[in-house]
Image 1 (cartoon, each protein chain N blue to C red):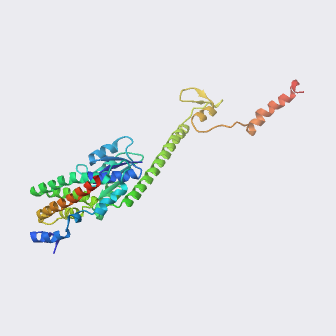
Image 2 (image 1 turned 30 degrees about the vertical axis):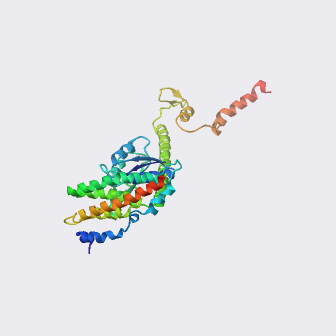
Image 3 (image 1 turned 45 degrees about the vertical axis):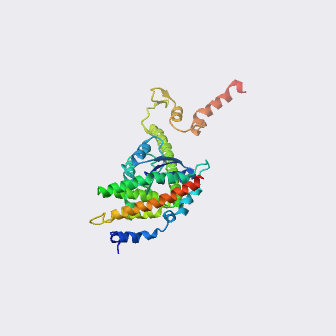
Length: 142
Length: 207
């Protein structure tokens, strides 16, 4: 079954979802913590800074994706998905990055068939990732 | 060496900036292609540039095309960042004027060594440009000596650009890197020096 067909029903959306079991699965913490080696000596925390940048930027991208979906502006949607994919991948927010990649590469005569389900999934996975990142941030700032 | 980053994604931009600073580069960041274009036109602009392909407004490809239209003795070394590793995408980037490309997500070590390649090429081009400048300066002197020089048929003085007459020796010294060591040729020795020496020997004071 193609991915496009798989996401056309709610049941199949759930079939895609089980790869995410817990909140901690939402973020590859090993990748995120690898930025430790780039820390500056000035007392600032690069990881906290990156989390803050991501959590400030990603919701805006998701809003842009939702608005583009509502307006059937596929180019805008794909561009926003592309951007979110990049920043998510960098910080180890892999499932969000994967969903963005699916959105970016949806093609066909009705290019956005299934896009609504994917955007819904994107929001829920981002919410999970946000919790994990916020928890990481709290830990680092203690 | 100075590097400019053009990346609209804040997270990616910050990571790049941190990496490059750690590797000893002097980093300038820009949020979009238009800002990068303005920065690259300034005198003393960065020699290395890392450009994201997909940016609002002026994208990475357009930026490469524009930069290549700027006449420069040392053109900047452009590295494109692309999320698409399809051959057609890479060809498009290189054709637009990029020197190199990296696909996202990139490996840090790969980025580091590719930047080193860029820095080496810039250093070579800089040395080459300096050499060309020196040669051009030398060539301009040679051209002056190649022109038609008005010379006196009798005393062999040359008329200079200020319309005054000067010796060949002075003129050549002023218009070239040549220096003179003084001696006597065999002909002059026979016709001038030898008679003078004989005349000295014959004079009463010599006895």
